[in-house]
Amino acid sequence: MTEHWAADLPDPERRAALVHLGVLTGLEEAPEAAVEEGFPPVAVVRLQEALGVTREQILRALHMTRYAWRRARQEGRLSPDQSRRLFQMAVAYAVALKAVGGSRDSLRRWLRTPLPGLGGRTPLSVLDQDDGPEAVYTLASRSLYGVYM
Image (tube, rainbow, N blue to C red; front, side):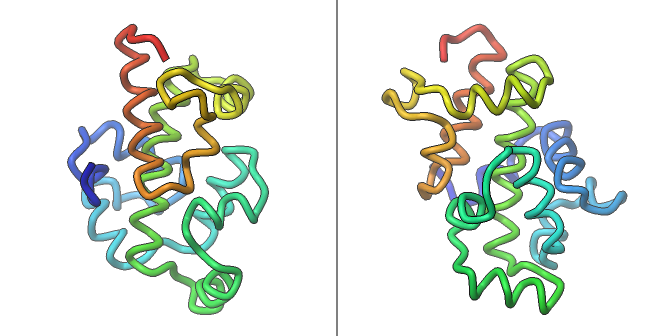
């Protein structure tokens, strides 16, 4: 699994992720530039709300400490590494949302359901692992093509 796997995805999936993060219009064409510039902290809050998780859960999945979160809010930007991780999680979210039929409630249930494709773990429980967003993305995208989750 590669560090920048989300950057290689088709444009519609990358655009959908940016929409879910609430990143400004126009960045859809160059998500890598937006990542390097650093997403605004509100993007973390938007994904947290979309996933239906606590602040602690989203920060753990982003590999951010409370101090790093406080600093990002003060500076008005996440670091490129934090933004990259958030972008990967948003891509996984966007594809998973599509896989469950577009319902946030269905997605929140799916995120908390142990799945054979994740070794009996829930998608939410693997998000904080280094390759967690990619694993969730892969599983969700396979389900779009009829592969059992």
